[in-house]
Length: 375
Image 1: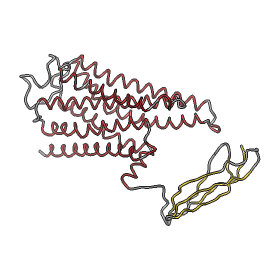
Image 2: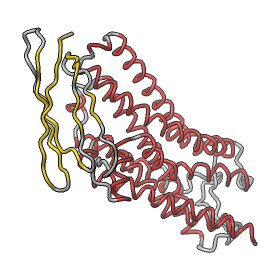
Image 3: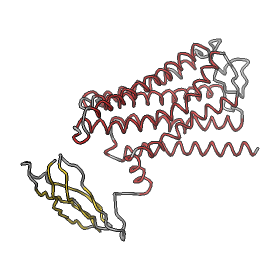
C-alpha cells in the first residue's frame, strides 16, 4: 500500500514537471521576439510533443503502474498505446529535423535563409506528424502489429482488465529501424559533419582576423553542441527501450517481464521531462526568457548600492583600444551603445563612444573618448 502511494506521488511529480516545463518552453519562444526562429519552430514542436505525452499518456501509464490494472476498456487501451507510439515517433523525427536544420546552418550559413524557408518548415512539421500517426494509429487499429493479425486486446482470450501492446517481428523491425535507428544514425552523421566543417573553418582562418563566415560558424557550432547534448540525453533515455522493444518483438513475447519493461519505458518518458531543463542550462536565450516569465526580469540591472562596474572594450574592426572604459551608474539599465568607427588613415586617433542609460526613469547620455592604435 505504501509502495503504491509513494510510486504514485513520484510519478505524479514527474508528470507535473513534464507539463510545466514544456509549457514554459512554448511560452518562452512565443513571448520572446528574438527566439522566433526556424530552429525554435522545431523545438516548439518537440515541446508540444512532450507536453502532449505528459498530459495525455503519462497519467494512464501511472494508473497502470500503481494499480496494475486497466479499467477503461479495450478500445481506449488501443487509443492510449497509439498515442504513446505516435508521440515517441514525433519526438525522434523532430530531433532529426533539428539536426538537419543545424547541419545546413553550419555548413552553408550564407545560403541558409534561401534553403530553409517558412513553407519548408511547415511542410516538414506536417510530414513529421503524418508519419507519426501513420506508424501508430493505422497498424495498431488494423492489427498489423500482432502475431495473428487481429486487433490487440479485442480477442476472446484477452483479459478484460489488461492493456497489452502486442508485437510481431515484422512490425518491430520496420518500426524500430525506420523511426529510431535510421534517424539516430542520420542525426549522429549530421553532428559529425558539422564538427568537421567548423574545425576546417577555424583552422583556415587565424583567430586574430576571423571572417564574418567563421564567426557565424562558431556561433552555430555552439548551438549545435547544445542540441547535441539534447540528442545525447535522448539516446540515453530511449535506446534501452527500443532495444528491449526489438528483442521482445523478435522473440514474439506476448507478455514481456513487467518490471524491466516499466523501467525502460519510464526512462524513455523521463526524456520529455529533461528537455526543458536542458534548454535552460545550455541556452542563454532560454535562461533569460525563463527568468522573464517566472520572475518578471526585465533587463540587466545593477542593484543600487553595488560598486560601479567597468566595461572593457575588446577587438573591434581590427582596432585595439588602449583605453576604453565606460562606467555604469548603480541602479541603471543600459539601453543603447553607439561607437564611432574612427579614422582609417592608419594613424593613431580618438573615437567617441556614446552610451544611453536609463537610470531611475531618466535618460542619461555618457560620452567616453577612446584612444586606439591600428594593428
